[in-house]
Amino acid sequence: LWSVPPRCSDCLRIAMIRPLELLIGLRYTRAKRRNHFISFISMTSMMGIAIGVWALITVLSIMNGFERELRERILSVASHVTVSGHDGWLSDQETVNHEITKRPEILASAPFILGQGLLMGGRMVKGALIRGVLPTEEVGVSNLSESMKQGDWNALESGKWRIVLGSELARQLGVSVGQKVTLVAPKGQITPAGLLPRLKRFTVAGIFELGMYEHDSGLAILHLGDADRLFKTEGLVSGRRLKLADLYQAPRIREQLSRSLGAGYRVTDWTTQHINLFRAIKIERRVMFIILLLIVAVAAFNIVSTLVMLVTDKRSDVAILRTLGLGPRRVMAIFMIQGTLIGLIGIFIGGISGVITAVNVETLVPWLEGLFGIEFFPSSVYVITDFPAQLKWRDVYQIISISFVLSIVATLYPAWRASRTDPAEVLRYE
Image (tube, rainbow, N blue to C red; front, side):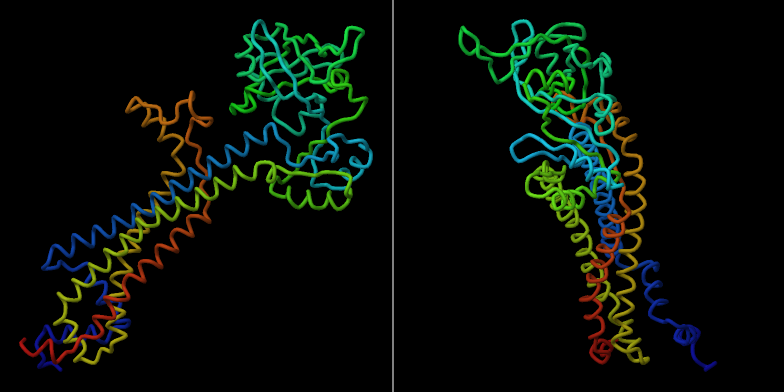
């Protein structure tokens, strides 16, 4: 053994170390290669995976934030669960209240009367959705009282004939707090002169702004008593709005209430009322995930190119290892370790960058807007003008896992090709 040249004795000492595949794979990775083009492609593969993982984490976090923001804005005026009658009127509120009180998951409930009408302010006429509420109970099921831009929510009192308008609706009518608007009810009244429309003058008691054009431009709030007299509901209400401790339990609560109340009632929840919108968001999120995952796939394909060229460059080394007794599987492991290490470094860099960006995106975007003097989401065009982000660790784990699997799969063919090296053929002319 001592007569063996120093270089060969180093090889024998290395051969005694376990695991040998890991040691040689790491040595190939950090060794300075004769072919700098291979090093360049390795770096390109690493950075491609890093960029792909970074983009996936950042974009999915922003889409999660948009979905959360949109859901909160919708639920600021919509209810988690709504109970009404099949004919549009809830005749037996006692039965409904009894079922509601039996469920601790329901935090609050409030009655409402829903109708439509024409609002006239000056020379302007605008159709609107009219909702009659009890202000003290409505506070428990919606955020309307917290969205008041002008006026006072508690100014809605029965018999005072006051109204609260959405900000865009008030602007279109040209009215502000303290001014008068005329509400034309859809059902007329029969007089000796014939059928006349039912008109009533209201004082604007407040203006709310939810940040959603649909509600800000088409919703008006009355006191429940005033709505009862205006629409002549004779004490009936359109239904009751429920607020849950966990809004994601709404489908389950809806099913339970439907079974308990029976066929005479109609129970809906926010997932069914806005199902098309949230379904479109999920589809868009899934498509975006697939598109961005292609970046990682392209980078993984570069790993294939890198390892194929490396195998060609190291054919003589592989042949020597084979003559020393290294089996095909262990040769495969050497190159799989090297390719996997390239992927792991890229995943690590991209994962750290993506998490940092997702956590600080709400600060980074305003800084970029100020730096370049542009507004990414103008308030005149988009409902949501900022970049909300919600980092979900489940998404991070999923992205990292898929990227890691792609990195391993990319190493299989080059490693298999290296394991098929014929030592006699390679070393014939050495």
